[in-house]
Image (cartoon, rainbow, N blue to C red):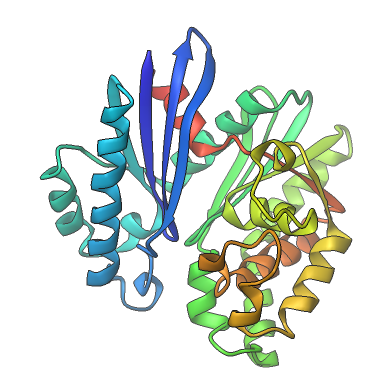
Length: 303
């Protein structure tokens, strides 16, 4: 059975087409476009008209591609931007006119599906900590066969760029405030994680555009290679090094860095800061990167 799923994220819209054989899946096509659907949501709880128009154009194109590749079913879901925006219902109606319904996930659903996607794509035993840094939110999930604890934090690369990283470089006061916000929001989760670590070895796994991009940047991939990113271990020291370098560069200079998509140049500093701060607050020396994520988890739940 061939199925497609479209992820309407706060930064990017993604298409994934898979062939499903029982409990196994094979990727047919994968694509991403940056439309910044979450632009402005953190400030005024409204979806930006230009972002909605851009997203609808890409969505229509993705649906055409899914149909041209003979997908039997096409699913779509939205995350933090559509959860929070007061005018998301207007956008959903416009999407419906294209012939597809959008499933708006709660923070807890987003966390669960990210966890399922990681477990499906990596052969990891024991306790797993999944960190999913998105454009508008970050999901933290801890569990083994079942989820023990999960949190959805209003911390994301697009959100923090608009709130704390508007300037190049950002000022010290904004950085300190952003760090305090992350530490406060993640404190309860950190306590639970430390308790689990006393009796169980825990593997940290990262998903989402910020962490996959950091992996590509560390490896200096001129052409993004999912096989080189999937399973790559991202060291804290490398994240620190990249963050320090990004603070010295303009957005135009960032666009020339190997491994960094030009469309992500303006939000990568905030995203890297989030990764760095979370690794500090959760006491992580490294994170294994997964290419399988919420999209695979969503399909596994639906099919």
